[in-house]
Image (cartoon, rainbow, N blue to C red; front, side, top):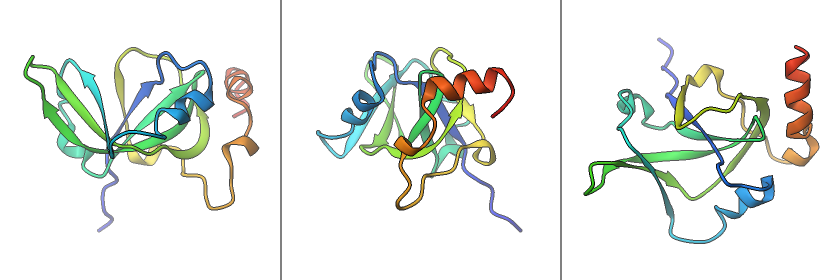
Length: 135
């Protein structure tokens, strides 16, 4: 029987002015990053081995593996992530607030050794081509 793929989530790289700025978020600091969310995802147990996929300019640009979830003193939750951004094949994704689930089979593939996101289409072009139904 085939193993079920982990569940992932997507989130806007809010406040980033460029793709390079998003990459910079992962350069320095402790091994673990934390994002705050108001509610624990109902399907959090399915996210073991899952990732948070980052959206910049209406395009999924990379993913950060999810370490787990931890409740804060104020009742909110930390989404704990590995401090790394794994580049993925750019894929159009409309903006949304908060986070959204992304099934493993619908997640973009990681870029392989020697592949670069710079070699992929720019996010604005991917968005425009998606509107035309070409990607």
